[in-house]
Image 1 (cartoon, helix red, strand yellow):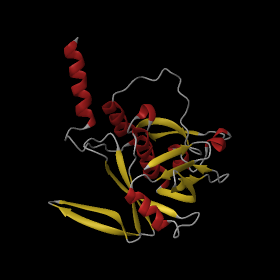
Image 2 (cartoon, helix red, strand yellow; image 1 turned 90 degrees about the vertical axis):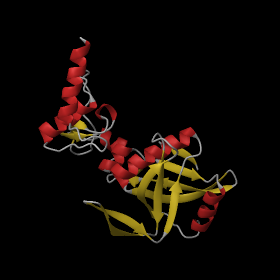
Image 3 (cartoon, one colour; image 1 turned 120 degrees about the vertical axis):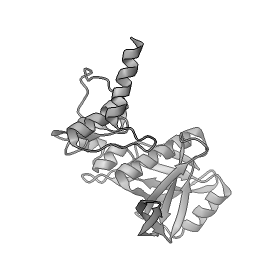
Length: 239
């Protein structure tokens, strides 16, 4: 899929390039209308590494509960039944980066994409989507933070910020840390440039200590405090 990102318009345009994509869009073109939602249904790696992702989108499906038992672990999750399944996979490296961005937008902010219109590009029927509409002015949005807080950049710039301290992610916070953000529009407090640099484990430990949120890793039984101590020992051993 070739993907055109228009930040000003707040849209993603999907241009099918593979026969299976063209066929899927040809089947959908008479079924979809403006405002229809394509629900996010998870991700998988695009290739052998986890650098790029493919994501699953569902149109006209029903979300149901699913349960799977793996040894002593019971996994409960929502799955989509019926409807039309669209696997979004970027063609070029730039397209793949946009797919990664769309995954984060859907997972953290919108839950899926909203169909706006069709367009004829490269002799193929392309679909134009947005992720969410601003709750204040109804502008289409494709920025993760904007979608997470339902507030576009223009409206956020007018916000009388009231900062609170809590869990943040993205940017210098990586996959999670403690920071200050506006409780109205979600924008982070501007950096002073004097904040101490922290490792990922130090950020995670701060989350546990300040917010009481337990942080666990998938690939190691070590806890943030264990890794922080190990990092400290490694630094001291070099001195």
